[in-house]
Length: 394
Ligand SMILES: [Zn+2]
Ligand SMILES: [Zn+2]
Image (cartoon, rainbow, N blue to C red; front, side, top):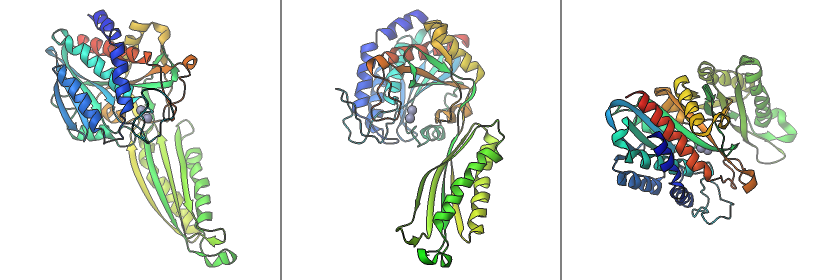
């Protein structure tokens, strides 16, 4: 049966490409994926699955009821595009100005629809249930959390979850996963510094928010170098500074925006206090004041040992040991992490770069595109891992 599923997915190559290109031409931003959701729901209904729409705003869930009691496995794809103007001159170029599928989510949806199509044709031989979850708003909107709040992990209760990501970090033919914490948490902050305006020639009569801000940017680096254990990765990054209006004015206010990333939940929880203390100390030392707005975003993504082994074995089974690489932890983040906080899961990477075809621009770039041969491979890996999980737990 496994081999038949594998062959049937290979036979869907043209359809996979067609689906991916249709999504690519019609990209939609996070939580606005209405056309995308309609297309997905329509395909799932035609496969005879029980379909729910509007789960987490624009999310779609298709339930495959197999045979026997078994377990419920969730397979997840994300649906949103990015606010980028596509620079690729391809026939399937984005038709929405300023919006582009530059992270491969178009491919993720095509892969999951192909897996759903083949597995639903074999539903009488599949133990348990599969929830095909099409999630909105991965790119900063926490769509996964919205779906959880709308009960996506209940009725029937999900036992485990799998998700994948196409990436040009890896060449076509290579797939990778890592055990434990593999992607960092992603939080963000805005610091408002308040001083007092004055003429540059009489700076002593003012309180300079630019000088305060530059001290703050430097001092924040000590959180990683002097407050986190040296063996614990921590990013504290200021990516935007706005202050001042003219060369001869003492700026009254400054606004700094940045991000904090780590794999350690205890360290993560302590960061607002650390920023507040450091920034407050500098501001008051310089006769100014501050406000900190700290937003917790995505948690760290943790791959469960059992599910990672399942994925690794599936990849080795279908492609050989040379096709599997251990993914080192990365400070990038993924809201699949919310699902994997609730149930054991594995999020793995599917190599999609092909430098010979000029397809090696990184994700999130206006010239991002990938080798579409990765679609069949990704679908085969996902389907094999799903089959192995459900048949081991009849
Ligand atoms: Zn992305
Ligand atoms: Zn992505």
